[in-house]
Image 1: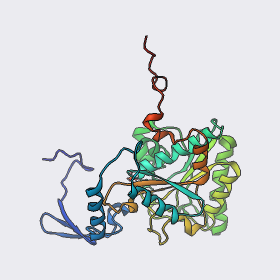
Image 2: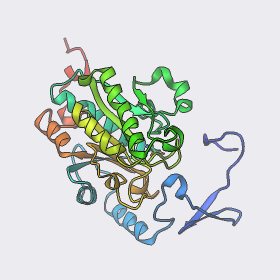
Image 3: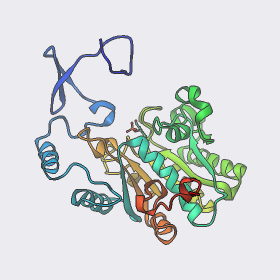
Image 4: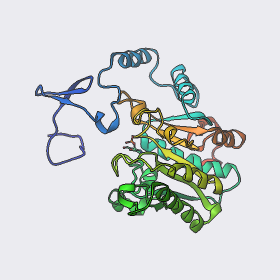
Length: 319
Ligand SMILES: Cc1ncc(COP(=O)(O)O)c(C=O)c1O
């Protein structure tokens, strides 16, 4: 009898009691080769002594300090490193606790960017069918997996979906890769024009599609065309590399191989390697500048001291 709500309620799971390198051991002494690293998470293997020493060292110093009031050397070092290794134009990092939260934050940053810039009419998010961006409501709404979305549909924000770039399914007989890339990217331009050129906030896509289509890279030129269309209409490009980023495709970020720099880049999974829940949004200098020159903060992370209450909390003033 378990009190955990497991992913499958019927049936039972083995108890994982240990992990070393590529192997997980269960309580019956069986060893499993964790070849996929779970859901593309354990990229450094299990029980890596250097990672464990670094975690212990930080725990010995401090485990938590409220980010309204403090920063930490370890968080600063991580951000420095991520920006140093990021594509040109990325200037800042927003740390969160996982992939879904990173996607939520990226969607909000994209919206706030236009509010700060005086374009509050921009409200549409375009994403792709057969995509997965996480399980929280905003990320689920962006995702294009009908089965996962269906029962939560009434709770989801309005989003719009175009076909993915999925040559195996959608490329026509006799159509070259270049022709297919142009046609697949054209779907974005058509959607932007249908919704109203000045009304779209962002296009969200996995650089390499993971959970819903199964390791599907775009055909050559597709993402460069997507970048050009986004630039033409002032739409932000959010690349979700929660699964395919952090070294999983041979470069740190998958978009490096496409020669494309997104405005917002989400990462998680391989960032923490399963050792701690962590995700991040990498943001371009222009996004940061819009916040810095506008309200002075990213609204999801408004520092406590900046909330002017009771007005901003909607409280009646005291009589
Ligand atoms: C591309 C992509 N985005 C977002 C997520 C959500 O990440 P998390 O499960 O850490 O919330 C996933 C998880 O599989 C993913 O593959």
